[in-house]
Length: 338
Image 1 (cartoon, rainbow, N blue to C red):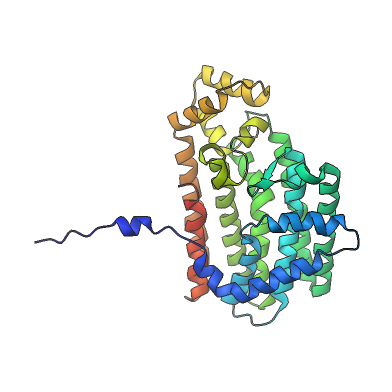
Image 2 (tube, rainbow, N blue to C red):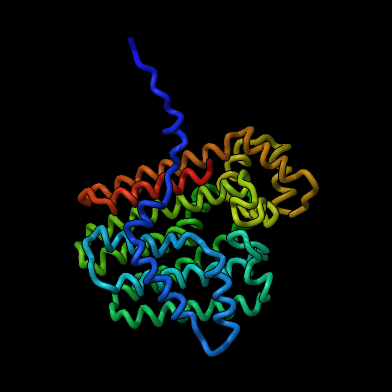
């Protein structure tokens, strides 16, 4: 006679960052201390505005990647602490600039810095954080690290400009969209991971593997972020739901719904995203069209495809708690959409 086993508990076990946090806890405390120390300035507005961003929280995902990658590669020194802080400064600078460009009012569930301090202050403090990041790179003394992080900063900026060019253009295809997110999001994920292998002086094949992991994880993260803009609640998302729609951003759910729709539906997308002629109920109709054409679920499936590639890239590393935590991180990023 067979035994019926309940799977309810297993279904309820959502992936979390707890294991990863536990492994890098002490290092992350050191990174946070470094961030607070390095964002200090005699110009009072700079630490005030920067502290607002820090107080808003965030998962510190990118510096966590540097810390976990270095640990997985057997590194026992301290360089990864400063470089993880450097990665976070680059990320925070891009957020400050992003929110000005996007005219965002919320960031991580709180009023955005530009909503409180104004656009000019946000841009200038973003510039300060970029400059501070380069100070930290130079202090590390490695030309390879400087090369990787400076190139990543340039590519991120190119990605932001490319997104600006595709905004309001419903003819944008999936290849262009992927180019945008690989530049503006995935490049810093990749650099954060590769640095872990560099400080540990691991072979190039391991550097490349970690960069591939970071690239694919970054694509996953942005794909799911773009899905969440159409199916999350505002409190969970930490920013205003439907921002991408209101700004006319062309993301994968839009691309799939547009390509799969009939001419009447495409006329709707052109009116709302190209002309930005939006009326009450348009966001709900956009979501309904995405659901009709499986645009949201298929975008999540794309993320799972990149998840498989991210997982495979770690295959060359010996099993370890750090490797397991990084693999679990893939599922954590994907499951944000559920």
